[in-house]
Image (cartoon, rainbow, N blue to C red; front, side, top):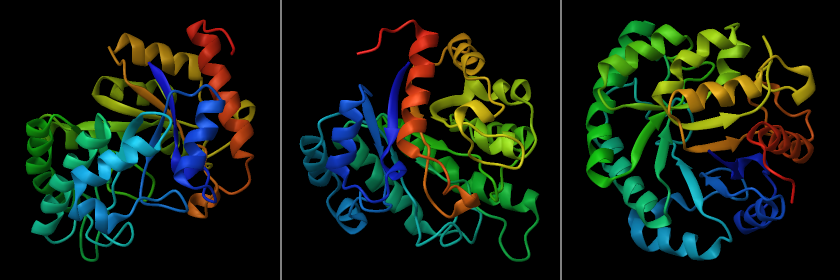
Length: 274
């Protein structure tokens, strides 16, 4: 397992600046997205995915570990649990071509929201049908399609996540324990999902708080690292402290928490400090 850091952790920095900071911290890669000052050009990504991917790859001092794609203008717009939208699959195929060119082994997308008039069960069923051809497209492209269960989405429990994984063969998850912990799940209940992970997000949390300082939260990260290893996971661990309005995650020193998480992993892995 190796560490990356999410570009959206530093909303005022350009993408190259995030890459330079990650390199200075001894972190091995960065995750890229469409958000904030480091955000990619969505129109260009969809129009010329290979060329843009190659340009981004050449610009950065580190590899790209993952690309986070949002189909619409926000979480609800064109979400996968809403009315079927053929354009989403078209766009997803373009993102896979971009990911291949930029060198990202995984793309992560959100599973959807509960839309007006829907039940959670109906939303999961609709999302599963939208995801099936996307997973197949990823398999054909050699890029793994992942979804992230998250607060306020359709997958807010371990059982709902397992239901989705059963409905969509080959689907993997971007596992972020913080979302489940904030909702009240114990760590050992969540770690059963480790065998389904193709990407992992790291940040501390506790019940009711999606983000917390490392020493004040309840996630036992050495335990998580061991559970991932025992499940056969050997992918990227993306440090994802953020400074944004979502779930009031605006009060932490992102750089300091990133360094603390880096050191936590290094200590568990028996790595020497640079």
